[in-house]
Image 1 (cartoon, rainbow, N blue to C red):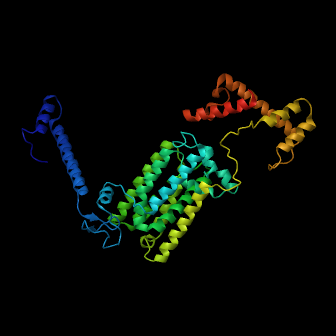
Image 2: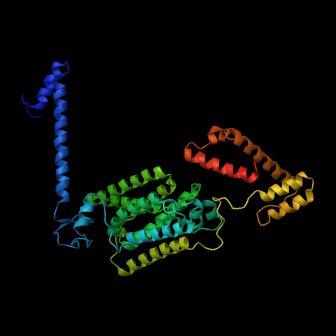
Image 3: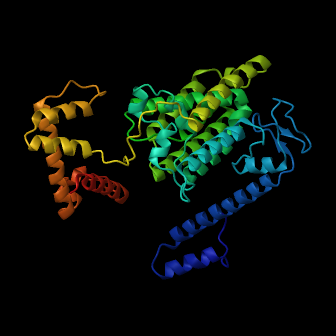
Length: 426
């Protein structure tokens, strides 16, 4: 520490502290340390400003320095970009080229979102899409996947619930995608995007996804994991810089997912699958290939998968299972109400015949009088629940542990029960 100057503000504060009964030496030491940290922070800020104003270009892949007029790295052949792209890279952002895999993927995602907005209609559709529309156009729903609609694992990558969900994933893709393309090449970037996106959906399915799974964030997390694993194994300043950047974006994605209630299982499996691939292979074997036929094959395979799933989003296959998330226009209890009225009147044979006809096509044995009586008892129980709900609300029909903790969940539960009670006439 430098010798104290009697006219210095630190010394004046130390003397004042001693006069007030504090330890003057301790106060002087703390203030001096604070001043040194302040000077260091200002010096680092000046260095960052100087770095942004640096005229030469730095290769984003190998770190070599080139003249400002250079367009291609002399060491690894990577594109150096213009002045604006260099400045963005130095503050941790990227500007994808107009014709790149990242920009084309973003365009496909926007086209799919626009198609769903038109399908739903209404002035509010551009801000938020209904669960029914997302399901109808390929949202990941575990029971439907197990029923044979496997393509939902891929179509879910291109679907987004609202404008904020869409905007964040497009921004994340625009920042992460260019880095991945520079290291692995456009063909492998697209291939890994689709592969890790599918693995993210599959992992979420295996962990018991509830509701609809959608969004490109699982695939984006896959690219983060891939680059982080590659950077960790490659080592050096460039490898560790890539690893740290991707870990940062993974944290951003997780935080945003917490805010919107995203499918965290898909995020985890996307990042984990990409990380395993990136770390398991030698860094040189994962980097962009110099063989043109390999580049063309990878690009063709990834493009075929992306375009196939996009088309399935735009034009869903015929015979898609009916959505379990939207109420039907007709009363779903009307037939059972009439059948139970017949049973109440003692017309058992007629009631059983109609009950059997109602269940035709379902995987169940032919019901008899006992099954019919059980169904009618269930219907009466629901009517009693409705009468209790009308008087005492949710607390009258469900114990506190079964009630949603958030206000949105409670409102949705009330909506569903009120809709059922309206159908039952209670």
